[in-house]
Image (cartoon, rainbow, N blue to C red; front, side):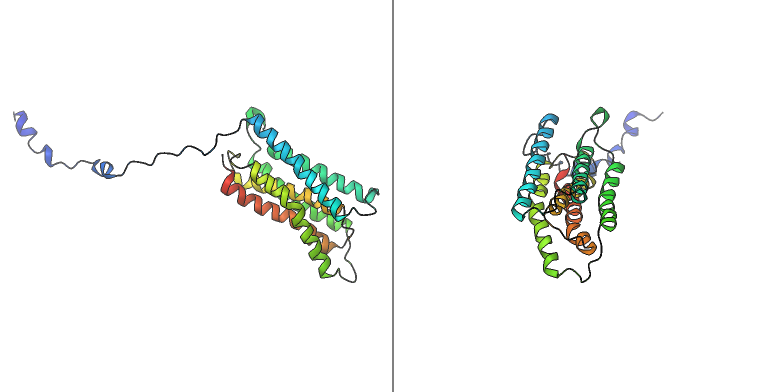
Length: 226
């Protein structure tokens, strides 16, 4: 029988299979977040305050622009009221936790992102006409400038308040919230713009919805994940 010394004589020639692991640098330490995460009640309270401030800004900006003379007529007031209600309910659906505290599912968010512009365009086709002669370019540009001024504060507030708030699908959540904020801006535009030209409504008034969805998706992807 070979002795133990003979059996172990070549063991030092066997390469160490974990030698490459020893040569690796140690992993970097995870940095602590720059600020502590908010509790759920604090986040909901902050979102409610931001929503009220955004709504107040839309009303103030519309007042500065000057309310249309026929704002109280049913044909104008009812569609605007429906749009405002849908914007608020959509935001509640996108932000309110579901059972066991889970957020809204991705399918629901995707449905919101698709339904807001499609519903707006369908309403525009049903309620608007093609002007003859066409609406002058300066009127299109004026409404686009008004849309930017109206949407600036709500979009900025949404990006600020909802940063580091999404546990999953931050781009879709941001897109849904941005599109719904854009719908609120559309309601504000409708309180002072009397043009019912289909091209004007679809392009100039529809701009906040498209811009809100794109900006919201970008903001959610970059800063939205908790």
